[in-house]
Amino acid sequence: MSRHAFARKLISLVNKLQAKKSRLGERSSRRLSFESLERRDVPSALIISEVQPNGSSSSYAADWFEVTNTGNSELTITGWKMDDNSNTFRNSISLLGVSTIAPGKSAVFIETTTPAATIAAFENAWFNGINPIGFTIGSYNGGSVSLSTGGDAVNLFDSAGKRITGVSFGSSTTGFSFDNKAGLGGTTLPLPTISTLSVAGVNGAFLASDGTETGSPGTTLPNNPPSAVTDNVTTDEDIVRSPTRCSVRRHRSDTSRSARRQPQRLQHRAGRDRRIPAPFVDAMLSRPKPARGFGRFGFGVKWT
Image (cartoon, one colour):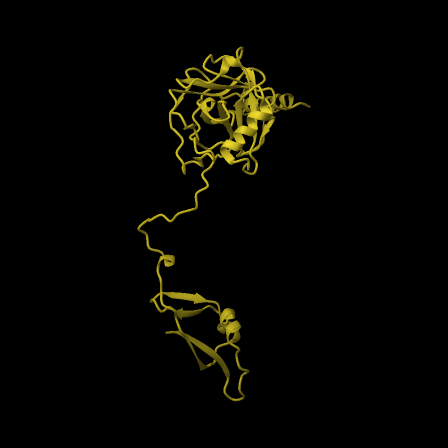
């Protein structure tokens, strides 16, 4: 039995029960009905995280942009295309060299008709030929979609022609890419405009090895060490105390074995009580055997 058939049968049974209650004098005005839900697509987790429209004036002579998978699963981009500010799938061109993007990873797409040579020149300019681990780069080509330094756009379409995301930008600054780690993007026109320039040390941006550009190709998150934040809240970890000393003395005890194993209260030097289980104290101190005629012996621990 299909799920729809089962749902109809269940609703029919509920309605019959309600009708029976109504005949018995119980009010039941609500009747259930079957509703077919429309199909809804889950929004894409892909963003255009960086755009460099003045890469054509660099040593590798090519514009490029970066896309990042911000989701939790691998994203397949086979058959996807890009377009500039003509904003149409009809004028778009194919993305080449990359078929999937792992979660949390990025891929750079560079405009070139000679991928091998241009990509090598790009990698040498940015990384001195030593690529970061996991660096992914593909290409696209077509004079009709060259990115303009005076303002343009980047649109991404899936294989069915659906716009996945897109951004626009104004005039660029030579030597700096547009940083869109904030994840701006739109599926309908007009596209949101990005304007933040890459700054070395922010969102993983750095000065290229050849010293002519600042950006973060292939980097999605800043690689900065954690730093302490002043919160004006004092905790035990913030207090620097002098080393404490512990003295042990033997004393007479007539309590039972089970009572001696109850948590014992120790006075902290700073004036705060802390409980330390008796087994922990027993592990540090070897207890003597009971002496004949003198009952049991225990130990008292005093912090000074």
